[in-house]
Image (tube, rainbow, N blue to C red; front, side, top):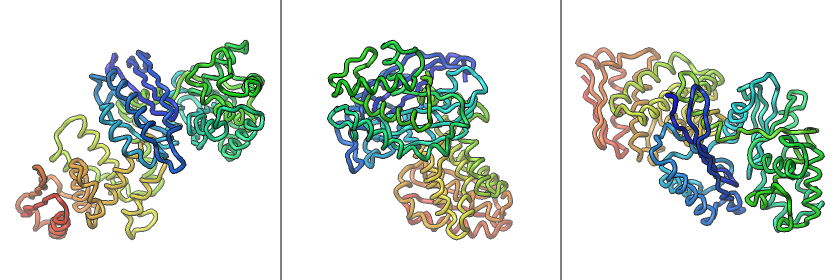
Length: 494
């Protein structure tokens, strides 16, 4: 990456949407601009997990303003991630279709583990390097992430379904602050987080950091009211709860340092934070400067660095965990990407699709760890449900669909085959699996694949069919399989 390159990260949170723009210089990022809008999308989820029209409209309008600022940015310079509200929303595809068209960039709905990883990356990059063992807590609108790490390495990550928007809506529905309401909210939070004590035992960390909105809001209020700056203490937190109870209603709260955009979710955020202090016996927590959006920016740098992309490390880890035949995986990867390069123009977009095809190819036998029978179904299930650092839900699903479609009938992928790039990836993978059936590197240089709108054509050099009669027969069967799709496939096998 060249010094001076502009990078942008968009965080579509449950309470706020944020845009961070930075300039890359020698491995670091200098902030250029930061925009934040309180969208409160999380409050628009009904009991059936359907996002209402008003919440979607607020999100679209915010993204339209962000899009204006991102004019001229290239796809590889931007990463947009969505968190818990869109993880839960049953109608998220409806929101995302318009949102991506308005923003002009892809929006990744990321898992809780991926959110936690990016949060830690953002926090650690903006802290001085040390050998301290850190616990990082991020209380978002509808989820709370906890991470145990050292230096730049996140060692343990979890995401829990509670947050400032969710707890404010559930336990302070009319903005009423009472001692009973806080007690109920804190007990409920401890019930959700109780299992976290086993994952993040106090004996394994020595400094607690708080990231993002709730932590910053509480620290600002305490500092503005005479408490020590840059730290959240247990006594300060207790004082804040007393002040809220004394006010009785969020509209009556008068506190120096309280920003209006935090007022409606302050009760929920504070109750979750105090539950964490009690559960882990924390005496003080340090507000961190870094957050999810900074982690997404540094992830863009890692993806541009040879060997730095965490997704590559995740693929290697999954292959090892599920005992994939490494040699066969590499053969199928090599052949599939070679075929794909013959039918996809050489540009940045197709390079990314080629990389994802290579990852799917390296994991195409992941399901055999469960059973050889219908292994591609098992493999697709694993990829759709595994926690895979670096990957978004859509990326994993696309790879799962490629693994599912590597052989057998194509009817199961009828909808996905409407996407031309997916059809090209799938054709390349199926042919690679077919050509590598003997678990040896095939003579794939003699196989030429071409594409014109709606049609694929394969041709071999003269004598190829005689040297590889079984492969030639399998190619004939593959032609028949594609006849039942909207794509035409012909083969000139000599």
